[in-house]
Length: 340
Image: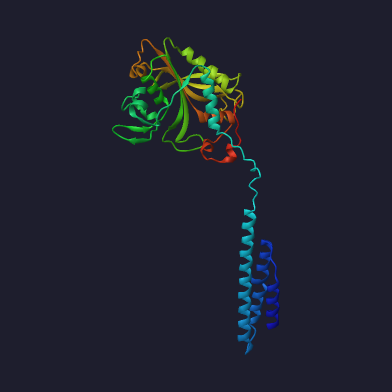
């Protein structure tokens, strides 16, 4: 046993290590539970008599020596790694940076703005925290009127009501209050509604709403504007359909559908086999809304429209889950490029 201890001590003393792989091999060979030193400790149990004390002392010395050698090798390798990392030629050019890509909602938002700007619309912006007047009352939502239940609102304060805006129509009210017709404005922005998050709904999403107020504005003007937008946005073969609907701030009101981009109007699961996909609402501005903004409703008329940017983006790119837009997964975001 003493000869074996002496032999292992000499082997460990002569051991050379230049890599992490060799260090791991040393650990496995000598100080692991299945190593040579552990094997000696197993054999030590069979020794009895006067030699047991002497052999035990030598065996403990061997174990301690092997552990110290292992730690010394580890420290030396760490120092070498630091020197290698610091050995950098700073005159060399940097590695090429990975170019990012724009968010799909940004891509679609800019394309929508581009289309309407060519038709004479300018951009307007407003606060995301709104008062009751701009978010509801001025838009023909009377107090305690059932129409208010159409909006699932996040209230910040009560009496007076301060809310997170439920639509960007509030921006249109601010524009009409501070401008004189003709008014032709586009209001993109983030809006909030107290809805359960799912593949088709979210509590935070983006809208873009348009407003045109002037003398002799008609529903035909609204239809032609939406028709041109659909052709520019979705392709020259796109068709539109306006269905009667209800909104407190427009009269008459309509829902806007476009022919399905996936099946080209033939019917598929995206359009629920109808050939049409709803993208927004529109209508003639209610005279009460004009009067609330000090615009003479007998002299001026106007139209308004609004659509969800997420809905259009999902339609263009074939995205089936709304939650993907806010998960910040770079694998998802890298797939998108600008729309021609």
